[in-house]
Every structure is written in C-alpha cells, then in structure tokens.
Amino acid sequence: MDSAVLTQETPRISTKLWPPSKGTRVLFVERITKNLTTPSIFSRKYGLLSLEEAEIDAKKIEESAFHHANEHHKEELFSDGSSAVLLYAKKSSKFMLEVLRRGPTVLDNATLEITRDLNQKTVFDISGGRRSVIHTEDAEELVKPLKSSSNSYSRICFSNTSFGVGAALVFQPVLVSLRSQLKEVDLSDFIASRPEIEALEVMEIFASALEGCQLRYLDLSNNALGEKGIRAFGSLLKSQNNLEELYLINDGISEDAARAVNELIPTTDKLKVLHFHNNMTGDTGAIFISEIVRRSHLLEDFRCSSTRVGAEGGVQLAESLATCTHMRKLDLCDNIFGVEAGLALSKTLHNLVNIVEIYLSYLNLEDEGAEAVAIALKESAPSLEVLDMAGNEITVKGGPALASCISSKQFLTKLNLAENELKDDGAILIAKALEEGHGQLCELDMSCNLIRNAGAQYLAHAILNKPGFKKLNIDGNYISDDGVDEVRDILKGSPYILGPFDDNDPQGEDTD
Image (tube, rainbow, N blue to C red):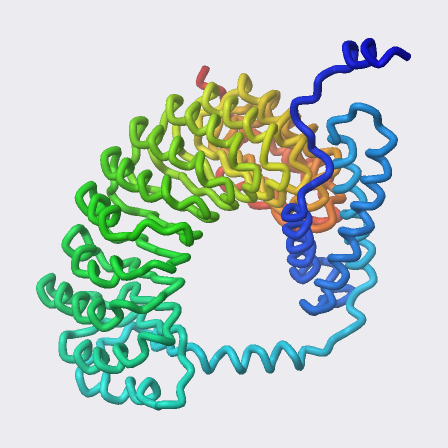
C-alpha cells in the first residue's frame, strides 16, 4: 500500500491514552497497596495483608496487568489506547481479587514497629487530650525535653492549646536554639480564647523565635488570624525559602489578609501543598491567592474551598492553576464560581494531566460548566481516582458528557454526583458508564437526584461484583417501596454496602 495514501486515510489521533507514564504506574501501585491493606469482606474471611506484603503484591499485580495490556496495544493499529487502559484496569482488578482471596502469607511487623519507635523520638507533640491552657509554670515543665542537648526533635506540635505571653517567653529561647534542626512546625489552634492583644503578642514571640528555620511544613490554621495575625507571623513567613506545605485553614483570611499572605510568602518553587479552606477571601482576595499559586509551579495539593469566591475570583484562580502541571489534588468546593469560572477551569484542566483527586461540589457549574469540565477531564487526568461534582444543578442534559468522562476513568475509587437533577435517564447513563471495568471503585453517591426505580436498579447492578466496593448512597430520591425492595434484593449478597433510605420519598413528584 502506498505510504502517502496510508497517511492520508489514517485518522488523526489527538490523545494517546497508552502507555501510562512512569508516575501514573507508581500511583497505581500505591492505590493497589491501599486497597490490599483496607479491611473488607475478604480480610474478615482470609485475613488482612501487612503493608510490606501488600507493597510486594501490588507491584507484581501492576506489572502483570501492564504486560497484558501492552501486548494487547501492540496488536491494535492506530489505537488511542483506550482499550488497553480498560484491559489494564480489568486485569489488575482480577489479580487483586486473587490476592485478597489468598490472604496474607507474611505477618512480621517487627521492622514497622522499630521504624515507628524511631520516628516518635523526632516529634515533640503536646496536642493530645483535652484542650490545655498553658501557664508559665506548665511551660517550664513541658519545655524540659526540648532543652536536652541530645534531642533530635525535627517536628513540634503545639495545637489544641492556649498559650499566654508568659508561657510563650519560656519556650522562646529554646526554640531559638532548635532553629537549625526544626523542619515541621504546627501552631494551629494554639491561642484559643486569648484576648486579641495578648494573642498577637504570643504570635510575634513564636514568629521571632522560629525566624530563619528552614521549615518544610508550617500549619497556622484555626487561629482567627485576619490581617493582623498574618502580619504578626510576618518575620517567620518571610524567612521561609524551603517551605513545601502551608496550611491557613479557618483563619479569617479576608481580602486584606490575603494581600498580606501574598506579600510575605517568598517566591519559591518548592511549595507543594497550600490550603486556604473556610476563610472569607472573596473575589479580590482570590486574586492575591492566585498570584501565590501562579508562582508555585510544583504545587501538588491546593485547597481553596468555602472561601466565598465568585465568578471573577474563580476565573483568576482557574487561570493561575494552569502553571501547576504537577497538581494531584484540587479542592475548590463550596464557592460561587458559576458557569464562567467553570469554563475557565475546563481550559486549565487540559494542563493538569497528573490530577488524582478533584473536588468541585457546590460551585453552581450548571450543565454548561459541568459538561466543559467533564470533556476536559476525559481528555486528560488518566489516573483520576476521586471525582466530586455534587450540588451543581446538573440535569439529564449534562449526563452524556459526564458518563463519557466516567467511562474513561478506570481508576476511579470515589464518585460523588449527589444533589443534582440527573433523574432516571442520567442515573442510567452513569450506571452504564460504570459497568465495564472500574474494579477500584469503592464509593458512589447519587443521593438527591430525583431518581426513581429504574435508575436505582441500574445503579445497584453497576456496582455489583466490584471487589472493594463499600458504599452506595441513593437516599433522598423518589424510589417506591417496591423499588427499594428490588435494590435490596439485587445487593442481598452485600447488604452492608447500601446506605439508609431515611430521606427517600416513595410518593415524590417532580416539581417540573
């Protein structure tokens, strides 16, 4: 055959799904290991594998599944690799089921215990038990282990406490002496019930004591910081050039506080985790946060949920995420993005090929935004494990795009589409998308979707015989009493996976 003709007639493949990258294969081994070490009906009957044994088995399972899929792919001319991905998932599920039924063969945890014991000596943690009010005399007793010249503490945790100025001054010189060895500091929720003036002084004392530490982890959450609190920690924040994880959860971070964070955090390519959950950042504050994101090229885990961000700020955040090609976990839940920000996000998702978990619930995406996101995810994110798009007003119209995306995501472990309006037609589309493969699926939430008997039964059949499946939630729908009995009969071999029907309305009628 003439090569020119062959080139001319051969359809152009825009997306190659096979082979998976080395990173994807490593992540898949980790997922298999997690499944093998999670309690299930198999572990109750055959025993639970140790972590060490599960890791060995997981590598063998992945290698064998990859070999079968790769040989299959070689036989398919001009294939985009989708059938190889499906075979890869099917074979891995089959081999994993065999290991679960075999049970453990090695039960020696001695090495694990030794490692755990060694790790305990590097952590100084006073957060356990009920909340403690730290007085000066308490601090003098607590600080003694840190004064030992032979201590090897690299992590300190003062969470769940309430430090006064006197107690902070006791710890100050000791923390100064530990600057060179501290790598992780947790100061979350450590000034509870203190008056603002005293709380700010305590923050400044700890900030000056820790200034210059080369930390990889810093948690300042649950301190109602606001702009004043952020600037009280200014000397500490400005001195951090190696920070990999920063947590500012529930800190009252408004527009001005977000501006302060942007000013104080040094430009660094090392930041991998950034959490801003439950603040009052708003659109303007989101613009400052997006500037931090834009210069954090190695970001892997970004959470900006429940931060009152609307369409303008959502677009800015979405566009800034385009540079974060290492992103594995993205949580933007419970904001007011709307369709416009959803469309902007869909454009960014094409760059986030390493995404493993994505949480986009309660963003007002509607059908248009949800369809755009689903199409983008289908074309990228080959290793997607968690997809959460609950509460986005998605109707049957958005069902086909969602189903097409879900069908291609063979490594899904959790799917949440609750509180939409998919009805029976949409539920059946989702069920059919899950029938083939999806051996890793553990949870499916289709509650509050105006589903009736047919949709509920399709969903029950779809998750039947998936080895690690744990929970199906179809409560809050319009399933008749007979329909509920039918679903229970379908799942009678695994009744524990079916959630309650407390909010189901057998006589429910569609308002439209």
